[in-house]
Amino acid sequence: METDILGAPYERHIIDLPSDDEGPVVATLVRRRANQSTKRAVLYLHGFCDYFFQTHLADFFTDRGWDFYALDLRKYGRSLLGHQTPNFVRSLTEYFPEIDEAIRIIRTEDGHDTVLLNGHSTGGLIGSLWADSRRKAKYVDGLFLNSPFLDFNAPWLIRRPLAPIISGLASLGHYRKITMNVSGTYGRSIHVDHNGEWTYDLTWKPVESFPVRLGWLRAIREGHLRVRRGLSVDVPILVTASDASFKKPTWDEVAHDMDAVLDVDHIVRWAPNLGDKVTVVRIPGGKHDLTLSRPPARQRLFAEVDSWMAANLSADAADSAAKSPNPAATPAAPG
Image (cartoon, rainbow, N blue to C red; front, side):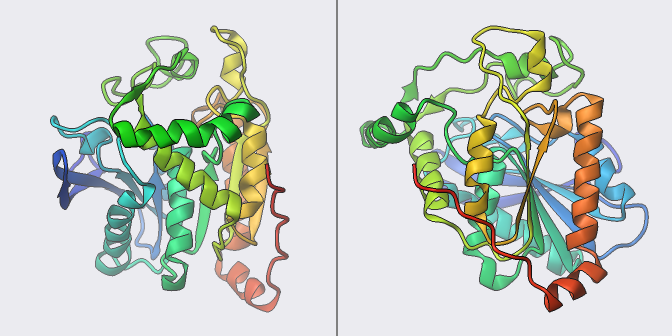
């Protein structure tokens, strides 16, 4: 480990991965130790057009005696190399090797026996698919999903009849851009240079996002189809989302208190399809990344996570769960 761009006490480790059609590939694991020795750790996965910069999230976990790790996935943030197409992937399973390696480091090298996976937006989708595929290995003990990307924020006609046609065009060129009108409302609501309070690298997280490409769109649709069919993640899952979505085409101050990226009703609808131990909590006034919300919503989020961890990830909770398994959640209806 070497000192991270965030400075001490943050450290980073470069994970070398097999080259792809664009050349060399890496991922970056960031670590921040708790003040006291601990066997508990959390691994954070960011969303699309994103990377780890939320140090207050690390503070939350380390203050509670959890070592904090964050993984900048291939072609994102710290892991984006000059020859690469930002944030591009053909299949979400391409991220599994770096998650596997991060978990190996956390469990084997650093000696943790309890691991929580925390995924935001696309990271929540990726993390859920990965946890489902690795459930027999018992790599993680719980999932905390912050506004997971479980469906496209689009009208039904586009999400269902037209989606397979659009994603099928990837055969004409995986890297071909899709023309989309991105308002930049969400970026404006969070970055300090605009209407927000947070500072981060706009070259790694542009206000108006990176271009959406056909290959990436197909990868996301395939992930969504897996969720619609139903996953079998067998650890406790906390799914959190705002209580409202921002629908206006131009900037409005109410964007500060809504999810300006996803349809939160989609999140709530599909969350039960992730496993049979799903808890869904809606946060009034929450932004898309709930940890970047205004203080009241942010505090409500962390209070809910605190309560859920105490009920599901403590020694007492594990003993109770062994005696009385949680009832199964009700899967969403097709559509």
